[in-house]
Image (cartoon, rainbow, N blue to C red; front, side, top):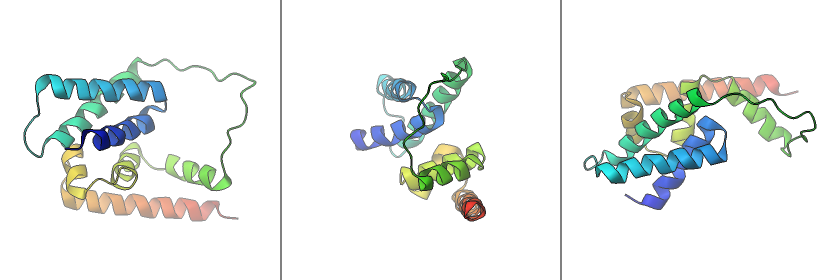
Length: 145
């Protein structure tokens, strides 16, 4: 297992789930610390173990978090209209659909790795990912002028 590459993927996963760079770094480090403390879970199971651990740590962090109000003088984000449209379309997806898109296309995980990490069959990953992409496509088309 390429630790640096997997660390980056796990960090992106946590960053997307938590929305905070600092919290994502903490959770990613904690997941790897637990991985190394307990020893590898077995050949071919390391990636699944890391994603499941990270998902559980993200859920714990999310429950622990208290919402903070945005400051009134917050400047507008510097994003393009395409980025904004994509973010809005992604927000229409369920958390599970967002997770599948993130793992499969942003982190470029194999279907078998996504299936192992989520506890779904490979067929279910294919089917749900295709449905999520179609939903995303329709949402983007609806937003076009």
